[in-house]
Image 1 (cartoon, rainbow, N blue to C red):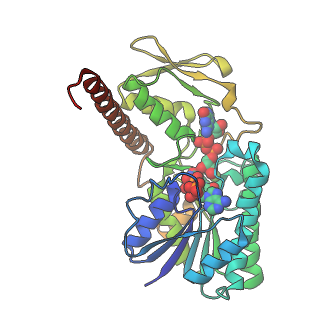
Image 2: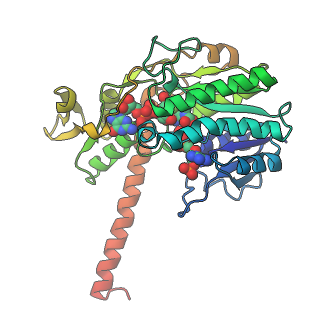
Image 3: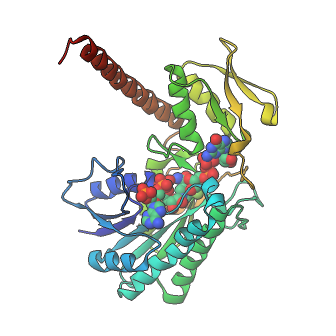
Length: 362
Ligand code: NAP
Ligand code: G4F
């Protein structure tokens, strides 16, 4: 039985990857961080599985990483842990650097110090943000990097240190340069999930308006569940190499909004420009989407579009398994169900309060 260690197992990708590896018969170990609230909803369904184990470790703490690598002695490490929010990296640049840059070095060194460098394969969660202020469209493995946020600069160090350890020590370590991938488990402050949740809330009368930043920003959005399969394929390859993982299709934030609202039965028309642009419900004339400069970034990456040819040819990976429309629809449907369930439980609580007041229940 192969043993895998996933850092960041509580995240969107970590949870999907843990499921995939368990299905493949792996013994799966994940790292978690101590928190004052117990918030592990993405992996709650896996806890208790006999091949699923959790360990405390923090990418800012090399002792904790060495300890877990020594204890687990993994065949494969998937280093997914990161401060992954680009806008937050402008507010917490030092923390982002420590976790997203030095953290990668800590993982690589832990493997060497535990004498596992010839046995353990390492996957590093790299990112299309490295292309940043893009120098070529679409972007492939040979496109020059131009990182454009503290997050991207930190991730660039991670990319190069992985390459360095591969060349200097002959380690099997690789980076997946993943373009944006989303799902019903995506964090609620990333733009896609913010939109699908808002569309669901607006459709069910729980929210009036959605405020967004740059509506014209372009992304190559895929489905996270399809992308974790590629992480695994990269480590099963004959040679340690880096791969671009993307769908090969590009859409704007505005288009994402239109599709998401359409799924809940609202047709949006966009009018105006820049900060004055608005998304209007064509049936009622109500303004449902507005621009707020609060969501603008000091430097924004606006033209990401990946070329997944290498992954398709060399790994046999299918970049078009889930279409853009399917992705939007599955996210909206999950959020419609989530909001409906919240409303139902509010209703029960309200009824209960009323019944208690009237003495109907005691
Ligand atoms: P995510 O949902 O934000 O998950 C990040 C994970 O990292 C969480 O488990 C988080 O733990 C953990 N983490 C954060 N700081 C840590 C620290 N100091 N020590 C240990 N663990 C820490 O991110 P994701 O979307 O799954 O992305 C996974 C990885 O892929 C990240 O490295 C991200 O930068 C990269 N990436 C993502 C995308 C994308 O579109 N999703 C694209 C390219 C690259 P808590 O739950 O305790 O916070
Ligand atoms: O959803 P986002 O915050 O994702 P971003 O910045 O592309 O980063 C994500 O993908 C990267 C891969 O390219 C990962 F490496 C990274 O970890 C993360 O998963 O923003 C997407 C775009 C940006 O241009 C942003 O300016 O949407 C624009 N946007 C417009 N309004 C907004 C908003 N972004 C957010 N988060 N919130 C808004 O209201």
